[in-house]
Image (tube, rainbow, N blue to C red; front, side):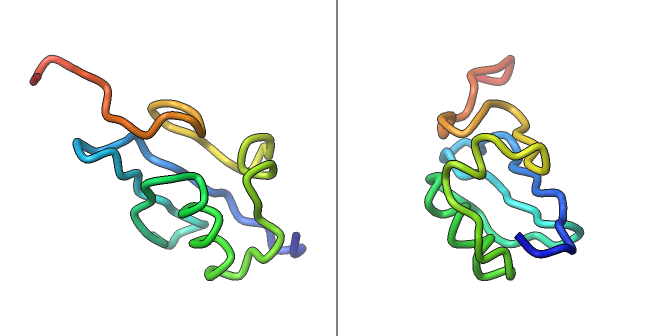
Length: 78
């Protein structure tokens, strides 16, 4: 990974299961699978990102569920 490592935030799943992905200050895409996240990060210059790195890196913040959560949680509005 490059020396200019940036924090990656994967937001909670939306109603359709898509999760917003941010690398540093930039929104890089709406992911529907872990492989989508990997591809977005590679396109953002994080060439070494892979599914294992996403699952274990302290630079990745998973909000609203971890790397295996791709459906929206049922809440008060359901």
